[in-house]
Length: 384
Picture 1: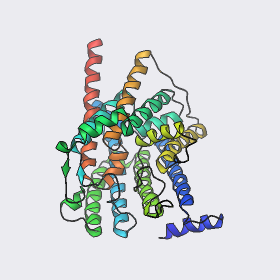
Picture 2: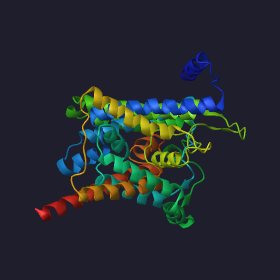
Picture 3: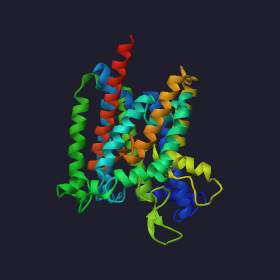
Picture 4: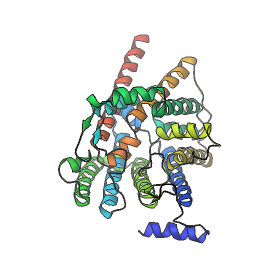
């Protein structure tokens, strides 16, 4: 509650009504930008890369970057569970925890995204970080992934997603939320906190049991900061952003594309960004938390690159390299929307809600990436 009071006081000092819906929408978007700016800055500094984490394990047997990812997951789970316990987040009002369990979409979307991010040289968040660092390949990935996400949300790919992967015969209908606590009869705030702390602590014990990881400040910084950013995102949209819709007078979540509580994710927001650019003069399209976070990551990474002299222009090595990145981008756009999240959107944000489908998506993403890396290695050896 103190955070809400502080935001309200700042808005009041600026002469704005913190309870006004339009003010809330703009504030949610700006706070999303700030959080994503920190994400991009820290992501560039620490070289946080989820695809790199899988690659390190598959190719070298190194788990340090994977432990950084797991640390972010642990922090996000514990922080999100605490928000649920304090009443600052209704986890049932998210895209991850619904009673309709789209297991096939989670599996296919995750596998597709894993293949795509390997071909494109990085996941959604890494694409944005690299873009801010001067990588021109990421411009192409940005555009193709964004367009593929858009047509999967509401276009031709969306027809296949809804009509096949989310069709009634392959959907499991549950009586309540699909979270682990709810499935075990512990869906209360207290039960969620207990399960969240237990899972989070178990992950922390595993992560910090490794001596080399304990000595790597960059990986520790990345895991803690990214986990906290996800928690803060939930707080901004799920607590401060909750208000009265000026058109319907219903209590809704303002400033998000889904009209639900959201936190960090980087595929669907690219699609919404494309839609915003295409219909900029339409008053119905606005800069949301997700759209603002896209630009926050890019600018945060750019600021780090310029201030620390790591900014470098990079381009494609060959037409074949460009083709691989385009194919990968399209697969990520389709897979990320179909799975309802990427390595961050599902792999950290979704898992922070303890939703079962998020664990399936995470496993599928890792499997898709690992299989693709193995295939690439075999093909490379044949060419040698």
